[in-house]
Image 1 (cartoon, rainbow, N blue to C red):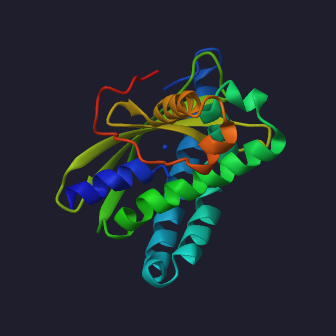
Image 2: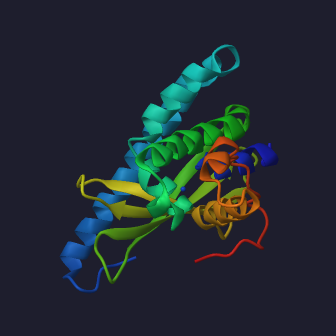
Length: 218
């Protein structure tokens, strides 16, 4: 059960006040972010429970349904661009689009089975912190609790984008910055493939070890 929940924590992959404004305004932003995360998380869990039965017989449908639900909360396009780092500026529009698709698909393939088999769990929002330098950035502290009572800390990094929505742009699990780990992986793959971005995209894998504390946190 514990390994399943740890994989679940990873999946939630294949993610406290504004001082420049008055207390009322800061509280309003915090409340807004909290509501987005609480509502979106509840909808995701409900969708997961609805679609669990389809995974074994029709995994592609499961991926599609979960992608639709996750895309309401997760800014996959922004995350994929940050994973590519400076390579995103060098890549063509087609390459960026293909990596986005590869990135999402690899997450679903890597973690869906563990997610489906993880059993009962609870996700609690512990607190919200708006970035004091920008009211368009916020961190949300969550705890994933397994049926056995084990607790796993997760931090969502939220961004208020041009679409005027709060969306998740990164996740920290057990102190490991998942977005940074993926970006380091992409840079390493680029070196190994001698700068051939098409090979990196074609062979991309979302497997990372979030139990290791050797991954840098930014």
